[in-house]
Length: 315
Picture 1 (spheres, rainbow, N blue to C red):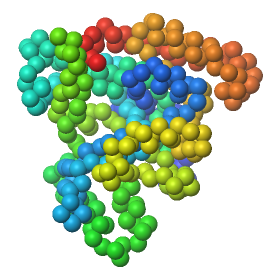
Picture 2: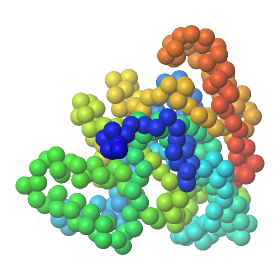
Picture 3: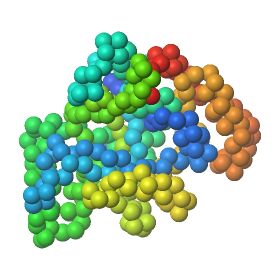
Picture 4: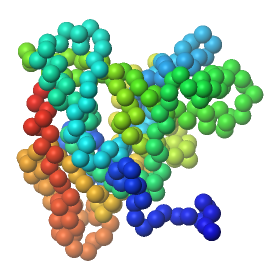
């Protein structure tokens, strides 16, 4: 009988109750172009709300942190365009007209929140690349309360070994509340922009995360989590710096053969991505044999989602 240590990766995806594909979504075509040209997905610092954990350093409450990550989801392909109920909160949402709310309800899809472009890989690829499913916490559970107490103790107890305290801090990179508030930009009926707040079930996102390994972060003097409230506003600027080649050890690389799908919203976008693939220099390809055939195979992986037909007013 095989032990867990003897079991390696199966030659097929064995996911029967969930999708066997991991999708990484983005809002702009230029981001997809960059991913294809670099053959890598570059992590960024994303600000996450952690007030549900009630983590304190003395009397100071930590409400948010910036986590170096890239997010994927394993939502089944056919459900990505499904709309779900809108639980809007706040003054801006309350000011929406009946028609605006109806339009928002109709267009409340995963595409609307995270973008109409995506690149997708097999889950077995994700496992080999050390992606981890997010742990969704019920804020009222004993587990969440114990975690909060343990985390707060890190700030108070100088006797905790550095490797233990760092491990506890790093666990923040892989947790998310079961439910919470998410902000979303919309275009109103008068063509003005607005940001509304929606109470969302995050568990339905079925998120997996890539966080660079500790060794690479240490070598490059980079933090996986920024908790300093004075530095968090600089997260975007710091993230741009990680696009430099000297930070390649932090990037999530892949081969073109690893790609299952390249999702675009319409025919015009498909043509533009085809042009991007056609113009890829030979140096982008690991295998230098029959590069034209490899480009054609990559082009064959581009389905059109036609999200523009269901998302006419989303900014």
